Length: 112
Image (cartoon, rainbow, N blue to C red; front, side, top):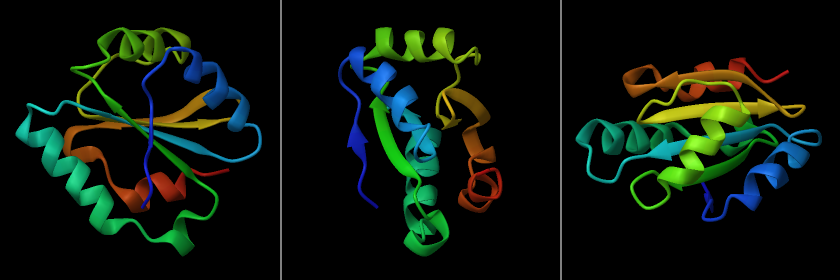
């Protein structure tokens, strides 16, 4: 699994545009939270490139880039959680999950 790191608010618009071609997964991670670390580890262990298809995974460090997390919540109209995944398709968040509800198979099942 190859995460693309989000470190600039401008990337949010790029993610929206990419999502018209391929589904985009955004993982919002709190590096100081054990639940967030466990959720990140679970998704990385479960990641199957064949099942994931064209999903492009992005990673956001919430503690370092809280303002970007706030922009994601506002732009995609999703309440902030940590950890949290958002599945972006055609410029919109079509699925989100947090904490131990973050499951690879569930994410894949939501891809249109």
